[in-house]
Amino acid sequence: MIRFATAVRSMPAIWLAFPLVLGSAWYSTLFRLPDGYGVNATAKGTAALGLIVPFAAATAAWEASRLRRAGWWQGPWVRRQLTVVLGLLWPSITIPLVATVVAVGVSLLRIDGGAPDARLIAVAALDIAAFSIAGFAAGLLLPFSLAGPLAIVVPLFWLTFVPAMSPVWLRHLTGMFRDCCSPSDDLAAGPLIASSILDFGIIAAAWVAIARTTALRRVIGSALSLAIPTLIGASLVAGMSYSPTIPRDTTVMLCEDMSLTRLCVWPEHREHLEALAPLAPRVFQRWSLVGIPVPDLITEARSDVRPPNAALIVLSGLPLDSDALIAALAQSLLPPFPDCPGGATGWQATEYLAAWYEWTGGISELAFASLHAHVFDPEYPSVGEVVRELEDAPPTIRDAWVARIRNITQACDPWPAHDLRVE
Image (cartoon, rainbow, N blue to C red):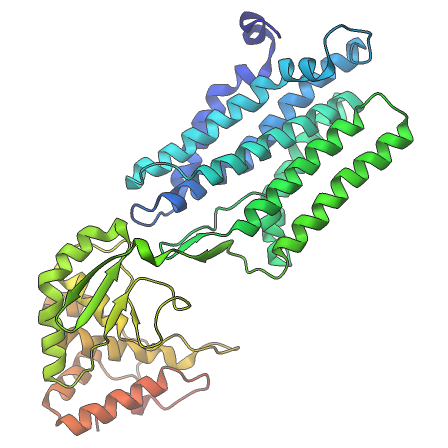
């Protein structure tokens, strides 16, 4: 093992440690984070791996190139090769890991997200170790003029370009999970296992490539060590969407009965639930007076784990003032977004529907005006004008208008703007 004083004097990984940590911490501030959700904050922090892993691989290649130039790797030394490798690679692994933890810590501090997600940290550590060893192997086998650029470009391509390629499930093999997770999502096991298997395959392939055996055995062994884990990992994630997620466990939700409706939120939105407790029953009562049906359950859970008649409420990033909460409750009553291959032309009509639910729910005039000040098209009637007409209309006309607008919101083809008016 190299003495620490010698390492500080001779190893580029230590010289560049501060810029790497600082750059990783800065990079983690570029992402928008949901309120208090530690899994998402950890995932966004590990997005800095696109900077960190090339650093680990390149500095490892530099250390190996010194052995190559000196001709020391194949010498009859007493120390085992693994001891030599670990003695040279510890800065290339520990410093990038520290940079990753700092980046994750910054993300968590931004939202008071609690402890980091250990699964994501473990996968990040495996990525760093795998490409460090791969960079070391490249430095032993090739001149640094080739090994250095390769050690930077290959992991950079793997972590930043592959996630943008088709099929989209390829990104789950990389260990880059920055698309995880919305408050209603959790990280799926398949991508975690697949990326870990592939990292072990990279380590095995790199170790075989520098083993003391014939060139043919090294080539065949490395190819098999990489191909088999790749096939296994691909079989675990093939067909997945871009997001490496499963529904979050709903048993952790905080629920409260408000009038005849049950409201359930994620733990990080406890303050929103407390603010809704005195407000929501009044909103529900006002809706009932004008014939607006109130669902039995309003929840933040995903559609695939909530009952069919339950409504979805979105509280992430929402302030705690009553107008914002009334608007969120109104949005929960809207129909689902239509599945239209060429775009949902009728979805613009949801603004009129939401405005009616907001106004009858008791939103202030100032908040209502600020939410609906714009106009989609000169042919469309004013949102405020439509709401005033609905107030003056008899219940049968209001019910017919709501049914018509809910039908329009699901339209995939053009529809007459006149249908927005109260008749």
